[in-house]
Image (cartoon, rainbow, N blue to C red):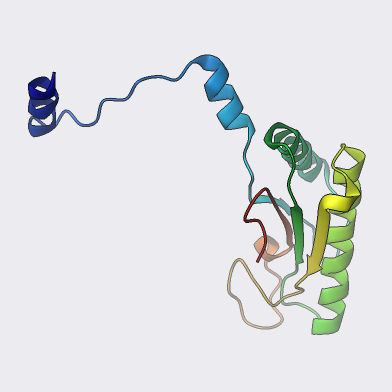
Length: 146
């Protein structure tokens, strides 16, 4: 067997993998700790239908993963004052927290943070409205956090 494996590697066949049983695959795929990201319209903290679908998937994944802390971080683009953007990112994170609570994630395990414009996903100059920076990120499980 080792000669066959050695010849396969020399011949460039690559690694041989064995399929997991279907139940093991679905459990592994269902438990995804994130990060999950939902995006917001300019100067808005309301959860859109597309964001709701992502949050529903995140809540289902949390249930599959079991116990753990949930970290919810709000972020904005660089349009507006720092103070305003921190407040907006806090409202965005609070709305995501409320939504997830309504989907069965215990409020006691969730923590929110508001970063405003200080941690952009896409680096821009001050005053630029970048849609990818207007987001909330959700992670959970061991090692979640910043």
